[in-house]
Figure (tube, rainbow, N blue to C red):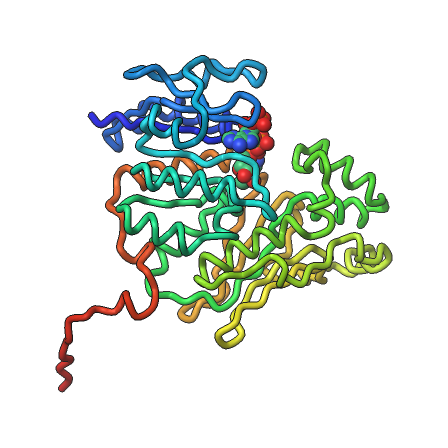
Length: 361
Ligand SMILES: NC(=O)c1ccc[n+]([C@@H]2O[C@H](COP(=O)([O-])OP(=O)(O)OC[C@H]3O[C@@H](n4cnc5c(N)ncnc54)[C@H](OP(=O)(O)O)[C@@H]3O)[C@@H](O)[C@H]2O)c1
């Protein structure tokens, strides 16, 4: 049986949920997919880069936030990769959309060290998607990131595996629970502060919910979706963003009283050779596929050249469902060959130099 060495870059909510899920799924991974795993490296901001002793493994399931893991401390990510020798690296460090260099360097170094990379972090794709995809292709390794957007609802693998040769024209989605929970509270007579308190009680709001309320969390996600699925860079600064603080309270309540709802809607669409992205509060009617009686729903509607209105919906997404996306990518990474269409370099270089003749009758 193959035993794959795993490295965790980041060991917070998602990393811990992944460690638990892996432990729970170990028998299934062995029986159905014929592999086992051992964790040979864990890195955190506070704990640094820790690698197992040669030939040994770390026990992430026994770690606590105060005392992450015992092992050898390495100077940096390259030393850690050399010591832990992971076959698969999970990038689960914090997303810093404006300064993603550290996470990009993590992915680049891991691929160059010969590991597959499975990422929950959307930052690297905002800055360097094509470079990293091409690097993975050249290295013969997978670079997979299903967990990075709508964690728990498959969108990237849906495209890659389920929609070959389809071209995404437009994606429209509800990508942020906190804003929906706050808007629901306002519909019911509460205010913004009560909505934030409700979102915190449900465990969906960040300590500082500004990025949720001002639309920047959605903007980062829609940029990542457009950049990857339309294979065209969508810079954050080009997204037209309006948050829910700008939505008038009386309009929010009027919409609800007349059977509709105002929600924070993110859109990315092609305009000729260009791609435009917006995030703004919109009135939704019950016939709209984004309309959600349940404010903890995350929804996406894809319009592709061969299908219209393909809708995916997830409920109560969080660290656990994101961990499942990571596990699913792990299974893909270690059981499938790197598909050439996944990261094929675009443009003239990718066109076959062999002339071919088409015979038509
Ligand atoms: N939570 C979700 O539901 C969810 C869903 C989809 C995607 N994501 C993405 O998944 C990633 C992890 O999310 P999370 O909720 O687990 O975040 P988190 O709880 O804040 O954990 C982040 C982890 O990264 C570590 N870290 C900080 N700087 C690091 C560095 N330089 N090198 C390596 N590790 C470092 C932190 O260590 P210290 O605590 O010691 O600083 C912590 O262990 C983020 O990119 C997030 O956007 C999360």
